[in-house]
Image 1 (tube, rainbow, N blue to C red):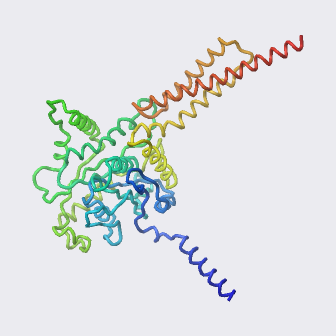
Image 2 (tube, rainbow, N blue to C red):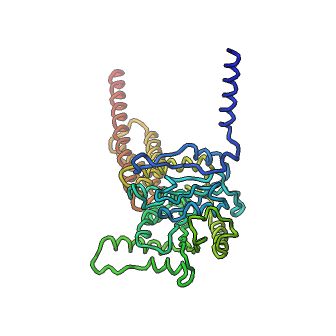
Image 3 (cartoon, one colour):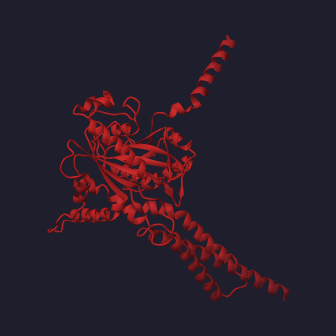
Amino acid sequence: MKISRWILFYWLFLCVFASGSLSIDNFNRAFPIIEPDPNHTKLHLASEGLEAIKRITNPIAAVAVIGPYRSGKSFLLNQLLSLSCYEGFGVGHMRDTKTKGIWVWGTPVELDINGVKTSVFYLDTEGFESIGKSNVYDDRIFALATVLSSVLIYNLPETIREADISRLSFAVELAEEFYGRVKGQDVAFEPAKLLWLIQRDFLQGKSVQEMVNEALQHVPNNDGDRNIDQVNQIRDSLAIMGDNSTAFSLPQPHLLRTKLCDMKDGELDLVYVKKRDQLKELVASIIRPKIVQGRTLNGKEFVAFLEQILEALNKGEIPSTGSLVEVFNKGILERCLKLYSEMMAKLPLPLSEKSLQNVHENSKGEAMKSFDEQHFGRHHAKRSVMQLDEEIEKASCNATKILSRSVLDLQRQITSFA
């Protein structure tokens, strides 16, 4: 009986070990990387999906699809990956959303981008405006997809509404805050290419680029409506960012939309198949490896970047670029404070109070200058500057106390010798 128990234990061990050692086929499916909390307000990491990304040693790029719920995002991603609904991302025909949080296809597409072998991950996001979710939750999903992706596909049915433009406010604020600092050469992270994808039944009439251009034109605001004014400001910024965006139209694959998953390419609309293949080529032509603080990221670095961003976006009641600025400036702030401390540590003793004050001012000036040359953020960096100033003043007080004790000790020694 004892022997059979050992055999059973050994067999179970082998089964567990075999299931734990994942082969490449195990990654050939969709994994969650970000999941909602029970209240659908904040987000947390899903470890299983992160393992699919961590194992990649090449530079990483990401294509994220965002848009309203039940707009065909998951089906579109499967089409871009040449997968059926039964192989790829889950596609739902019910009124509840199929995708919760953010999901990744575990096997990246390998591309040669300007001579660099790049692993491209495709991300499916939970659709916004679905029942039972707060706007803040939608904003967090949108913000995270904006920061992580190299290409951001904004999937919209039929037309561009004012609400669709308003949702880009975070992307615009990120662009104004990070992309192209006031000073310094590195950028915190390069912006995603925004691809407006309009899916409509007929391609006649206005081109999709004309639709985007019209949507970005100012709306008259004779009554001084604050909301209209805010959306017009977003329109202005999006128009300035025009070089970083493109537009594409895609017809419906077939009139029987609930049957799409059971159809082969030969059964789909011929114009759709042609345009879909053109879309694949367009995405491949504009995508670039994700650049963070001047360098590409491998899988582990990409996950670490994701953790950093998620922590910042979960702070407070609303996701803000201010939180992101603080995250990116944290290391710079610490280095500048260290510079101040090292300069003060070189003080020759004894030293008069006036001389100490002069050295403090010079050291503080050098630290502030260093931060000014390196910091991220145009508007929200003020908080980091104030924090650095406070930390320097604390360090100065400590240095003064230490100096005072040293002077007293020296005076005692002189007295004892006398």
